[in-house]
Length: 125
Image (cartoon, rainbow, N blue to C red; front, top):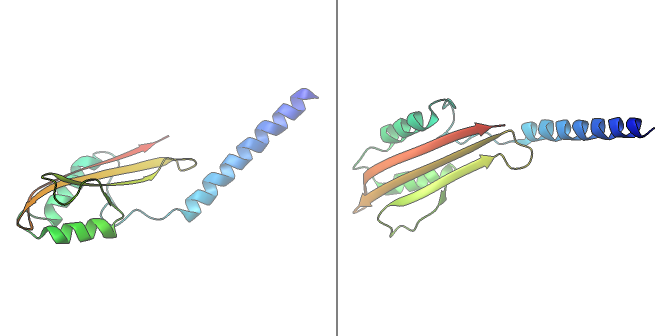
């Protein structure tokens, strides 16, 4: 009798977890355009190349900041910092299988980019 209850409890937990994962996959927002299409393997290299191509040195810092804001990146430093940073994180909390973490670091002089780099990691259970 106890073993039947245990089997039923385990089956119920598995079914509940599977339902949560399914619902999460249906309700999950797509990655922002800045990260979309980057392969999980070598993701940091590809992301850094994408940043360097889209935001060339000497271009307006305001364009980068606006794009990061549109892509759900959150500032980690103030604009008065010498090295500025914004980051993005999605998933990997309760029921999402993969966690996406990205960060952009840059510096600017007189409103123009003088350096830019980025990291992007995807970790899955």
